[in-house]
Image (cartoon, rainbow, N blue to C red):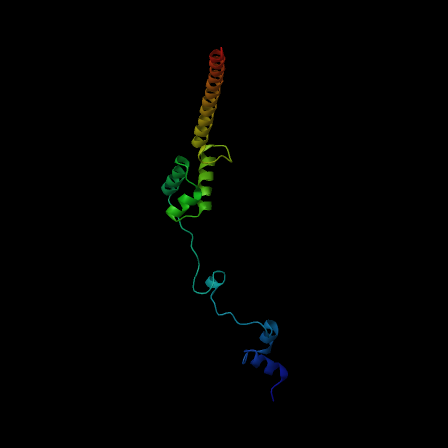
Length: 147
């Protein structure tokens, strides 16, 4: 005659397993047939190994990001990198070179923008002066025509 515990163990798929194991595992837990390398990555994918890039490649990516108004996302897509990876490389290069933290990689672009703003302000002041002179000339000739 089969005891109630043995019957429950065979119903749960644990036939032939000793009773202490059944008590520890319980009846609602399914067996896992995956290897440790598959535990955190899903079945069949194995362990994901990080890519290793040469220092020369990293320096080239940093120079690209500093040179011309391209975003980390653009550079990442072109070279199949994460934008965060590109950002980390630029930040690390800034620290190595003693640049202040928090600066956008296009520091030269910021200086160029400031110079352009200054030039446009001077040009606006000149145009306002010209407009004032033309307004006075118009008033002068309008009075002269009425006489």
